[in-house]
Length: 184
Image (tube, rainbow, N blue to C red; front, side):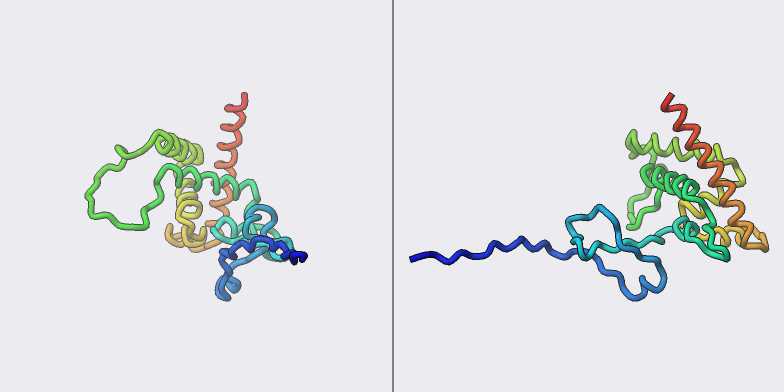
C-alpha cells in the first residue's frame, strides 16, 4: 500500500510589522522600503517606511514652484550625524523619571559617551556661537526653524531657515574636513 505524500508547506513568518494608522498617512509621507527588513517583507508587499520622522526630513521634501527642497541631502546628513553623536553621548533627556538626586551625571559616562560628547562640543564650536543655537533647536530638539526665529524676537520666520542652512553648511564643512584629516 502506497503512502500519500504530504505537500511540504513553507514556514509562515509572523507578520509583526506595524501598519500605519490613517492619521499617520495624513501627516507623514510613507513609502515602500527598498531592501532591508527581509524577514518581514515579501516580494509582493515590502514594508512601509515613514520618510518624514524629523524636521530635517521635512525640510528635504521638495516644495514650492518649481519644487525645490529647503536643504540639501548633505546638510541633512550633517544634521543627522550631529544628532546621532549627541544621542550616543547620552545627552538626550530620559523618558522615565528618577527619584535619585544627581547633580552631575559625568561620573556614569563610558569612554564612548565621553568621546561622543567631545565630538558634539567640537562640532558646535566649529559652527560658532550664534548659529549653533539653531542646530540645537532643529537637529537635537526636533523643532521647526521658524519657531526658533520667533522665539528670538525675529519677525520673519523665513530667517530661521536661512540661519539653519548657514549653520548646516558650517557643520557639513566641519565634518568633511575632519574626515579628510582622519583619512590622511
